[in-house]
Length: 179
Image (cartoon, rainbow, N blue to C red; front, side, top):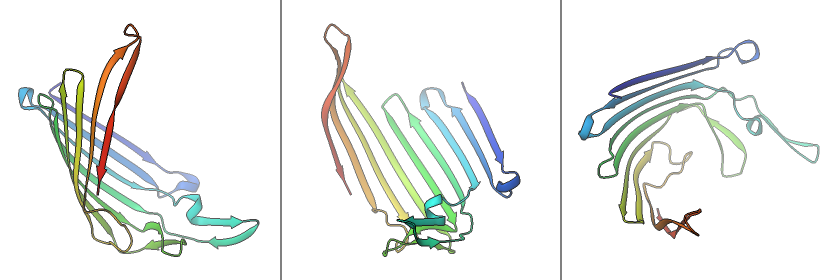
């Protein structure tokens, strides 16, 4: 298809009042020039149970009343399947981010957390030999709260083919990752 747009929405009621999730996806087919995709996610969700309360052997470690995190993510992707290339840019903004501090205690930051990512995917195939690569650059504005490597790479070189009279698919190879 040349054009596709989907949207989903969820709204919390009763005990979940004030919670929501909005998601939209757009896809544009560009023919031989590839494909463009964009997505938006916005949500307010409750904190996980572990952030609220923790008991060890009937002893209360913490009982918190954190605000609900507010998350917004915008993503855009250009894909050129002809050469196995895909480039994605993402921006995440989270208010009331929940995390575990250096003392392993649940904590919440009131300052917005921003994460920017640029990802490059390249998948090459020669006969039954595959070479899949992922490279990423990323940055967070609060390194004391959210620790991310500035860049990372994940590479896989493997054989993919059917064996035993074409009854079993074998993928055998090596992975290499670096931060």
